Length: 282
Picture 1 (cartoon, rainbow, N blue to C red):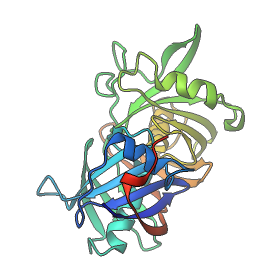
Picture 2 (tube, helix red, strand yellow):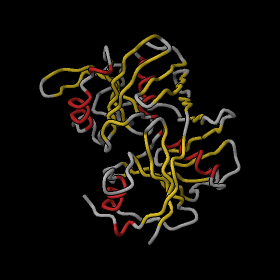
Picture 3 (cartoon, rainbow, N blue to C red):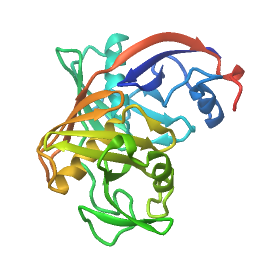
Picture 4 (cartoon, rainbow, N blue to C red):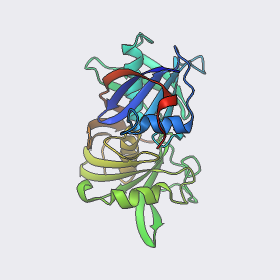
């Protein structure tokens, strides 16, 4: 079975995108991992599937798989690539595209400057909704990692995030704390782990260790979660430039039950075809 795909990226966070509207796409975890492998497959952080809508108020359904083959609820950089893909491939003529995801419906807006603006929905702050093991919502939690106490913010943007505030992202312990907190017992569905350095009330630096993918060049939901956490801690204004290793996103959150807005680029790298059956799992 040969499948057509498109390689895309949002600030270096890269994706293999499949049109599952016009072709049948059935991939198991072994095949997904093989596709994501950077030496023996196409190589990517996540794999995206564009499917027919499951709700009458949406144009498509959007599925996301991490490089480890596990399906996840949401991906902000992927959402921007999704919008660019369906527009460029003629699947939608809309400039405003309602899309269903495992985390709920979102809206994508194609801007005149070729960026994509995404209504990411409201952040989830109740520990049960994140999910995170804590008795009540708080702007900061203390978490034990190998006997050392650390302060984090805990936010869900449809997927769970832990957010550290650090002095400098260049020296942040991403490689050590990232995997430890991803698999921490207090995050029953694992966590994406962000390391945020506040440069001003309108600008932060950010590195993110993504659940099931490791550190990536950019993480859209991580950028949103960092801004929400920074706002809850009283560190940030409503509109924030989030500087990631792959580039800059603009994230806005008015607070309370308001949605988080994220704006940034999305780019196509190349189109190709592959036969999942001949990819060697590693």
